[in-house]
Length: 344
Image (cartoon, rainbow, N blue to C red; front, side, top):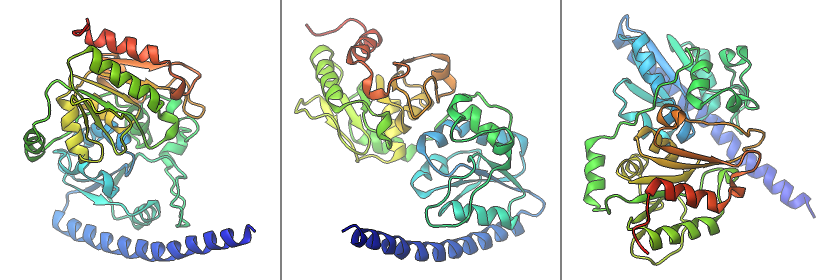
């Protein structure tokens, strides 16, 4: 009974695998030619690559790496290697001269082997492979300091750890986001309510999430207790209410539009995910819900203000997943942040 599904699964994988590998080599060749042409125009200027291609929060947290690399190489042509869904996080960074879209880790290995870059700052930990490609991405610098997926969150915040993986000093700067004026005007034209509470309820990893019932309870309490409107951001809505002061904007904003909405918020409340890193980078006060993630119990992924405890309340019932975080803890933290209730 299981041979049929297994057979289909095997051939479905192969159906995707071989076109992917062919596309990888084509993509590698085209990027190599493009980079070679750039190097011909650069003359003696070095071509420097910063590599951290995925995970929204990781890229936002590690923005200070671009500033540090620019400081070290003021005359270099600096690019950031990034996956397409996250390109806007680096597109407008004034410390960069450009970016390269990465197809997969296998392509990254091919470009590194080619020697096309004069200097590389690779923040990836070794052995996160593409599911189709045979190449095993290795970062000797990360390996040398014993950095693995089993211990990296025990070593410090994301910037502190990944900057060392790249061969840089352990950086501690606050991250920044660069929002072009056209994005600011686009968000302004939406006429969203000012002084809103922005919430983000679901991450890309279920272990980071807080129960939907708790989010709905919290949203209703906020709407009943305070005058602030609520805007939910993210991809998938969690809160279900017909209250006119609640706006479900899930799936309607780009990454930078989401960051701009968070920038104008009175308060951000969310789980540990990309928008939480946006709140940190945009200097927005926040309440962040953490919990045990795999074997990581006492960890904090943020640098800057949130690392210092400025403008943020971090909630973590150590040894328990975020789903077990008591509702009353979140309500009381929100109450402390917002002050005396305005409604009775």
